[in-house]
Length: 120
Image 1 (cartoon, rainbow, N blue to C red):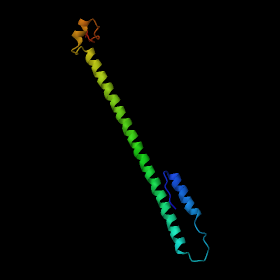
Image 2 (tube, rainbow, N blue to C red; image 1 turned 45 degrees about the vertical axis):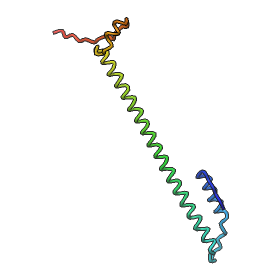
Image 3 (spheres, rainbow, N blue to C red; image 1 turned 90 degrees about the vertical axis):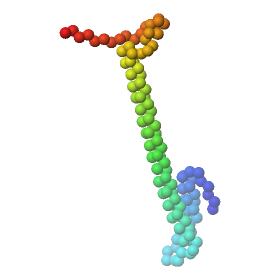
Image 4 (cartoon, rainbow, N blue to C red; image 1 turned 30 degrees about the vertical axis):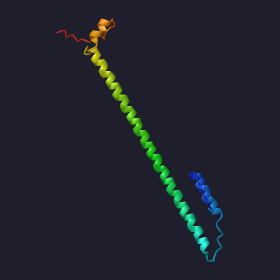
């Protein structure tokens, strides 16, 4: 029997097909060589199903970990961008940009400067 399966469900269906061809078990009789080999084949196929399921769980966990890592990197990039924008705005508000003179000459309004006055 030649089986080429592409998914776990197809593989399990093939194992069920092998189980269907299993010779009947007659009590108190000696099992022949082919019956024993068939039983060993079924045991080996069932072990492979277990291994495949474990591998599927491992791969799913790895993809979930990669998704979490990508989301964390995206959040970090957003935070870095917002920090950069905030710093740029604070610098502009304090009048520390080198463009402030060129803005005044070009007719653009410059950002307001915050001053604190102490009344003592």
